[in-house]
Amino acid sequence: MELFSGSFNTLEKALGYSSLKHKTIAQNIANVDVPNYKAKAVSFNEVLAEATRPIEANRSDSRHFRFNIGKDQLQIYTKKNTEYNHNGNNVDVDSEMSDMAANQIYYQALIERLNGKFSTLQNVIKGGR
View (tube, rainbow, N blue to C red):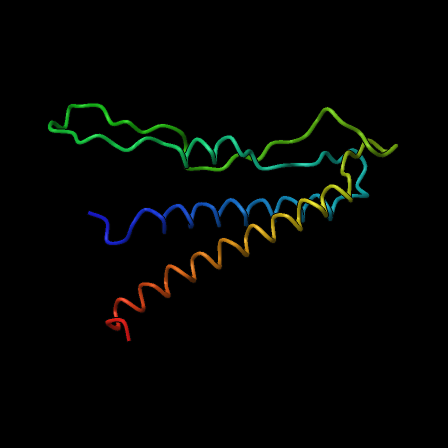
């Protein structure tokens, strides 16, 4: 039995994704002048598969199979098919900065939603006062 709804778990996973994406973008920006450095990105498909995982079925016997799909780990992959600089580096600073700004807005929206959930819980605990 879960004490809270699954939305806390979903928000936690979304915050983890956003945090990892921010670190990856920051690493790309930091290595913009490193020769032959290839930009990295976080795989959204893994996050989508995890978020849309079907509800687990009730098992009446321990020998029944579990319906676990996907992995709990986010995947970071390297973008290998592009080259923006003459030194083999493929980091596009403008694109990375744009991605970082969008990720910051996404992260802030998640934090606002999480604060709203905690505010609702606090209101319930206090009895609506």
